[in-house]
Image (cartoon, rainbow, N blue to C red; front, side, top):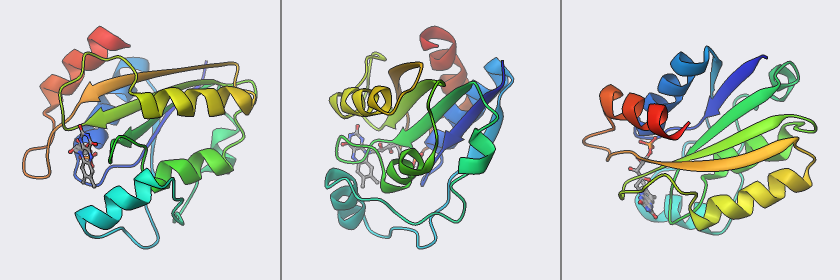
Length: 159
Ligand SMILES: Cc1cc2nc3c(=O)[nH]c(=O)nc-3n(C[C@H](O)[C@H](O)[C@H](O)COP(=O)(O)O)c2cc1C
């Protein structure tokens, strides 16, 4: 089974989790980048909370065709997925694929999907995914992103 990890990370934590997942499942890694990176906390939070999409340098839609299972990761901004990841799901053809949606947040979590992720899972199912699930991880901050050890432990326990 071919597996990919696709993620956006502004401050580094989601990237650490993406790599931990890729290491565990021998998956290929794709990092989403915005054409115009969002600056400032308030505009970032507002963009996520209002469900915005952002233009990507590469949405990897063509690359995703080859994969059976995709782990898609987002930082949590105001309880929601970031605009780059919303755009990824707009573009990707996910019919028949297994999707694991992972969220990385500043606050502590026991791994259960956040409410914003539950809604995303419903949307992903509606787009024809074979299976869709969500998991949440405790990341870090801009000053102190998640450590490799913490990410490996959480991935081991929750995936
Ligand atoms: C604009 C913004 C909004 C955030 N909102 C939340 C939030 O609602 N809940 C939370 O637990 N953490 C929140 N955080 C913290 C991030 O989710 C956390 O730092 C995460 O590890 C960032 O991922 P990254 O390092 O991959 O960018 C927010 C951070 C930013 C920049």
